[in-house]
Length: 344
Image (cartoon, rainbow, N blue to C red):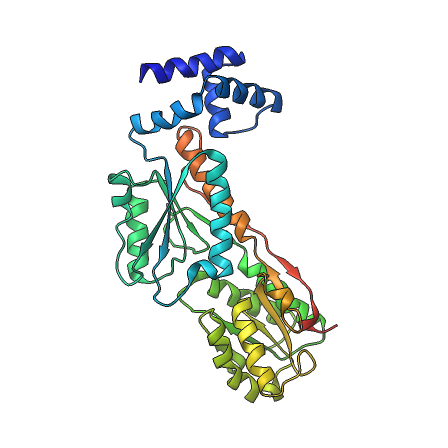
């Protein structure tokens, strides 16, 4: 242990800075002159300090891992979905740049998950929770984690507990922008295919949808509000009902691209012309959005940036607990991407 501390002093001496500056540079904390950062990194490299810093993490009782906890859903390929792959890419970039490890863990969504045990057994130093929802079992596990004041963050799901850290997108504004775009196209009868109600972002999308209609003086018609589960299959399944209601629809707003792609497939198979018979606006701006026929007008959600920000904030908290904000509350903005599915 003494040798590790001596090495940090040596890095500081060689770089001509304080030990605190060495710690800030190596942990990526706060603003720093580029010349100072380069000088410290060069000194650390010359003294092989990076390897010793890893050893130091074990001496302090740390794992050196950031955990990512995902729901185990049978027959669902989570890593192939745009939502999870983009979030994980952002998290991975932050972890890589900070020299940390990434540990993927799976939970059973139907039972209370013992998050705290991951810390007690030193498997992780902090964790990010993906795919959480408002189910009682999920809320109880998250509340226990918050009560122990352990470093963690929930992605894109709001909880009533003020001690729960979140990084999310502004889905109210994103949905409002999508529906307002359709209203600007002259649409008055705008349907809505939403996702599962146990997710807070489904409620946020509904709020934005209603706000845009009410602001334009359009009555919300619950008979043209449909429910899916964010899967392409659920979009296909809803196509029958939407096709039956075409006579009272100008357009439809869909809660994510996967459902929209399934819905469009199902409607085309019934002879529906898009966007001539029905204008469509979706949500996410996944890789597939620009490849559909017609290409999807959709709301771009910065999933990569959300994952990266959550990981960076947690790793900063681990490195400097005295100065970092213990509870994270970040809401990122969305952006409407206009393509042909909403009309020319």
